[in-house]
Structures are given as structure tokens and as C-alpha cells.
Image (cartoon, rainbow, N blue to C red; front, side):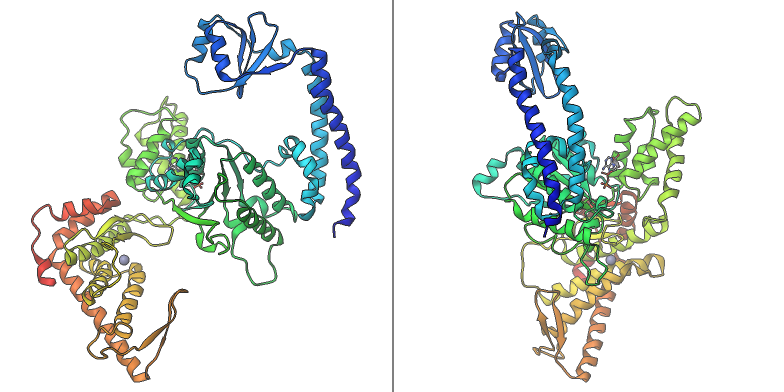
Length: 619
Ligand code: ADP
Ligand code: ZN
């Protein structure tokens, strides 16, 4: 089917012959004329020569060390090693530092360059024209040109930057959970053999999920930086307006480069731009689909242990095509959430190091004023403060510069992001503590690992991370009732403290109802129906749909029982909270201030003064 495009070939062959000729000259003729070639030696030899003072000129280049013997008759080169104190030792050995070894000894190089550069440009142009016309299928037929002269051709599309900018985990403030999650990948890239030996394979793809500006790109770069491996990146949105076929061929290029350089990191920003769910309607974006298919093909095409790890960023994980998140593709998720108070303070401090700033800054205060701001916004606030200082003719930024900047920056993003007002923050604090306190009072143990009021990517305003003690598969009736009580605890706390209720409990309501219903219709946990199945699960795995198997009257009665059960537990939750109102206040205030607290902190406060033994009564 590609026949119409073939006539382009002879011209390409023509270029290739010209280039081959040039290479022959470059590799054989010129060295022969020069009569001297650069000898490659191992680093040990270089060290020995340094020690015995045999080095004449030396030049440390970005990727190698070039040096001559004392007589300056021979040129050597060796790879670059992490060798602290090298420069000093060289100096002590009497070597002369020079930046002109190559040009001094090979005057032909400049001539060569004046040849190569124009021809390189010529070739790149040729390839550019060709790649525009290139079909996906005949991509491989170009592999001669692709492999031999890949250096020219591939430097053309600016799709991937090969630098992690020296970013390390330490540069990413906060985000400890994400860093911990990614640590394993760093370990793997350090020593893939260790994993291969035992037969473990790393996930090929990891999704970094979180709102914009939370440091996903930074984290990806930091993984590459920590593991000291190359970093390739491209952005999904670049493909949206491309010619058909270009996106796919770029993905192919990217991966072929990455495989050569493995172990390495490939980072795909905004993957949702290419990885959106494919819709059934007719107006699909062909380009996007081809690019996505190529990406899937590439991911399936290499073994898990080649050392290429693909990190992709998105803030809309739910909109991704399920094909992308299947096992063997992006099957790992690392949440990168908005920073909490402590995180914000750290981020502010990291960025404050980059500007001149007074040393009596209260970063904690700035951090608490900027509730809900992302890392990028905080970086922006610091920069804005520096600009303000300049405008006002100060030599360094002061507290008020930072405070004023918050407003400037926040005004810009307030509409986009869900920033909680102080009142909302307080309500959410009470709500979350309500859940946790009801849970704790029923079980007499730490109910949660973490409570936070930072809005999550999922859309929940706050959340309480429940631990299921141990692995247990059976739940008693009492445990299920307690769970319902815990779910109603959020709303109960709102009622108690504010006297009005909010929409914040919608998810709790849904869950509590589900549990109550299941108790009655599926687990035989009501006296009225004994062990009669009133509902059957039709689809165990896909969401667990159920269908009712009873008369309309029974349905009425089920509904009444469900309501009764939830009401009863809601009442219980309210009583627990009323009896422990002082603790509710104390904990909610603490959460409001800290924004995130751990289970231990929670228990510590709860047990500070001997709490009344209400718990026993409610059991
Ligand atoms: P994302 O990829 O999640 O949209 P980036 O990694 O591009 O976010 O972050 C944008 C900028 O915001 C970074 O260059 C950095 O200056 C700042 N930033 C974001 N998160 C952090 C963080 N956790 N620590 C320090 N700086 C951060
Ligand atoms: Zn809730």
C-alpha cells in the first residue's frame, strides 16, 4: 500500500552514498594523513600515568578526559569517572591544563567540521521531509538510515530532552509518600541485575497521579537523578495537532532511543491527552489513537527487565483508556497530592533559598495562609515576593512581601482549584474527626493511620484512612454496625458543632446505605427475614451488581429496615460524640491547624487526660 511513496527512495540512497563516502574519509583517510590517532586507555592507566607524572597536557571534557604524554607526541583519552580530587592530583603531578589538545594536534578537525555540519543539516532536512511522508509500516525499511545516522536525524525532533537537570529527591519538598513509592524504582535502576537474578520484574509503567504543579515532573526527574540514568521526556499534548503518523513515529523513535540507553527513565507528561478513553462515536482523533496504539505496542514489545521505566503524569486517571492501565502497562499508581501545612512550609523554604530573603521570616504563617496552594504556586509566591522587593527598592524580600504575594498568586488560581475557605476547613475538620472518634470509641484502638483535610484528587474534601486490623475475611454483625456508625460520625459531628448540615457526607451516606442493605438482604443479619436471600450478586467482579429477588411488599419492608438500621447507628454516633465533645473539639482544632495528623497523634491527644469510659457503655 506504500507504493506511491517509494519514488522517494532513490534520492535517499543518493544521500546515503555521499555520507558513506564522507565517513570513509573521516575514519580512515584523515587519520592516515594525520599519522596519529587518539588512543583510548582505561581509567587505571590514566591514574597510573598521573601518579608517575607522565602526563603532559590534559583536558577534562564533559564526557571524557583527553591527555597527552610528557613529550606531547601521543594523544590519549579515557572515560570520565567520579573522582574527587583528580584536578588537584593532576596539578601536583605537573600536568598542564589545556583546552586545545584536539585542535592543536589535528588542524584537520576544523576542516572536517566545516564539512560535516552542512552535510548534517542537509541530511536532517532530508529526513524531516521523509518522516512527514513516512507511513507507519515502512518505518523499518529506513532502518539503515535510522541506525547509522540516527545521531543527525534524531536530534531534529525536539520531543525529548535528555537531562534531569540534576534534580534529586531532596529538591522535592514534602511528598514523602510519593518519594517512598518511587524509591524502589531507583533501587532497581541502580542494580537491575539483582532483580533479574531473583526473577522479579519491575512494573514497566508508573502513573503519577495528582493535580497540576504538585511536582510530578520534578519527581520523575528526581528518579532519574537519583539513579543516575538518562531521562527522556515527551508531552502528550504535543501530539494533538500533529500530522497523522507523526505521533506514532515519534513514539517509536523515543522508545528505540530509550532502549539503547537503558537503564533509563521515559517520562510522558499529560498522558491523558493521548490516553483518553476511546469513544464509540465517529469523530475520534485518528492521530491520538495511532499514537496511543503505538505506545501500547511499544510497552508490550519490551520485556519487563530491560531497564526502561516509563513514568507518566496525569491529573485525570479516571479518564484514561483502560487499555493503558492494564497489567503489564501502567499498572502502578503513585498519588502526588497537594502539600499539607508542613509540606507547604518545606516547599516555601526550598524556594526561598533561591532568592535573597530576610532571616526572620515566619514560613509557618505563610504556609498556613496559603492553604490549598500547590508546589508550583508556592514557588510562584516566593518569586513574586522577590519581584515585589525589587519594585519597592529593597535588597531582600521580607515577610510582608511574601504575605502580599499570596494574594496576587491566589487571585490567579482561586477559581480553578478547590480552595477551602476557613469556615469550610473547620467544618471538614470536625467531619473527619467525627469519623475517627466514633471509630476509636467503638474499638478502643487507633482507628486510623492518617487523617487529613487536604482536598484529594478524588474530589473528597478530607479523608480518614481506615486500617483494617489484620487480614480478616469475616465480619461480625457488630463490626458492620460499627462501620455504619463510623460512616455517620462525620455528619454527626457537623450537627453537633454547627447545628447545620452540609453536602460533605454524600459519599458516607452511599456507603452506609450499601452496608446496611447488604446486612439485611444478603447476610441474614436482621431478625425479620432470618436467613433468606433477598438479593443476589449477579456480577461478583465488575462492580458487584445485585438484583432483588423478593416481592414488592418485602422490598418496602427492606427499605424500612435499612432506614431503621442507619438511623440507629447515626444516633449511636451522635451519642458517642456528645459524650466526648471536649475531645472532639480538641482534636478538630488540632486537625484544623495541622491539616494532617497521624493515628498516633490522634491517640495521643485522645488519651491525654483520662477520657471518660463512655466506650464501654456503648459497646
Ligand atoms: P507537575 O508536573 O506536577 O505539574 P512540576 O513538577 O512541573 O509539576 O512542578 C512545577 C514547579 O513547581 C517545579 O518546577 C517547582 O519549582 C515547583 N514545585 C512543585 N512541587 C514542588 C515540591 N514538592 N517541592 C519543591 N518545588 C515544587
Ligand atoms: Zn465523611
